[in-house]
Image 1 (cartoon, rainbow, N blue to C red):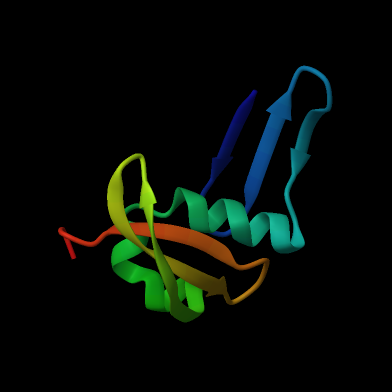
Image 2: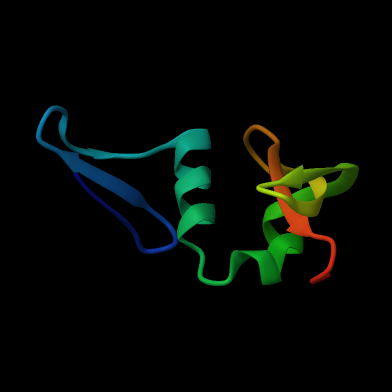
Length: 84
C-alpha cells in the first residue's frame, strides 16, 4: 500500500482497492498524521487538550492526555511524567 499527502489532498493506492483520494474526516486525519513535528504545533490541529489522568505505560509513569482535533474523533496520547 502507498499513501501520501501534499498537505491539501491525501491519497492511497492499495492492491485491493486501487487508487483513491481521501476526503472528510479521513483526509484531515491523514494530513494531521503526516505533519512533521505535529506535537509542536498541536494548537493548530487540536481544538482542546485535557489531562484526564495518570497511568503506567510499560512501567513508566505517564500523563494521559485527551486531544480533540478540529475535525474527527478525540485521540489519547501519553506523556512521560519525568520528561515534561
